[in-house]
Image 1 (spheres, rainbow, N blue to C red):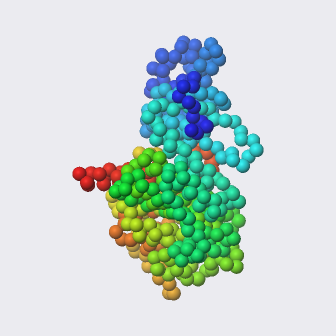
Image 2: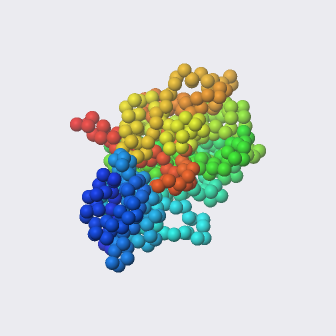
Image 3: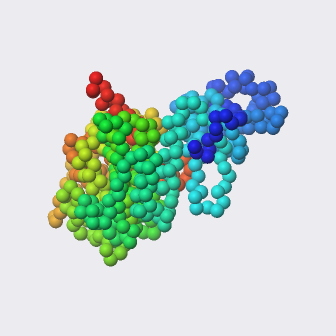
Length: 464
């Protein structure tokens, strides 16, 4: 259990969640003194507005404003500020939330702080007694906390070996089989991953997790870019652009969180998770601009830029995943700055050739408050990846459509009969907001998990 949650038997104070439209009704239910206090303090039930309620013994409860937007009030973020705004050591039960599962998820996400490396862990969050029926939300929060921890860990503490170990730990928690490919087997089976990680003294690895919730269930394959630090390689990034490159494994953290959600829910599916764990470093053994490298699929790739390394890692992972003929294949990566320019930090870009997959993913993102936005796989740009010496280049010579070009590159490594989607995400909160503290962020995981449920429902309906 997360440290922001309390045992159901604990004594708890009421946290009244209220919108402006419901404020008068709430005032009528409170004691006259409490109602008078709220009126005197000009409480208006604005979003995130909190007032403590006095009582004979001191603190008798609190009121949380939900704001006038009913849609926003039902999202997790409506409760994201509460655990750190309410008194330390206090225990609460929520009353009046429009969506109890969302309120528990928001509470837990708002309570998260990365304190592993600090001698002073700071104040503890207030605790919540979770209502019955919110177990799935609690499990989602646990998966997101673990993913955020991975992204927030500095590269000195999280290299390829440690990331592969995190996949092993994930497998152990859910009795899944995990295999870690390294050394000669990696160079033979995942040559592009080896090329990217060959410049680092911390050897690259590919971690593969397999789990069966049902032997005959649909196969969901997830691939994650796990670049634990990205210098840009010999095409070195400027210093300012390296400052957050510990988060370049955010795609791996996100698919690991999605995998945990699926396994914890015990869905009757088969799950295949692949994480390419590498460090893109500068050394005498680093791959070079204009090198031509092999890939698992057999295509040769000319290196137009060593800082476009994430797509090379995913190329081998996607080719490997397709060999198992998945019913749904999703990859996640902090792949391009172009996606952030187009959509900003909160909207991961979604690419797919399949309109029905796009609808599952987009609807799942809306339902889970984990939004995605579809961008086109514009076929006219495929020729921009032509190479005079290899089957294709890893970058385009044109300074446009960077996110689309990266997705089109990946498309070369996906079997045409596989339902694939690519998610280009940011994996970071630039500033703290309710439920979204500054630092590493797991994106798209809840959307992926919900889309997998849609796939399962489709498979069950087809079998009837």
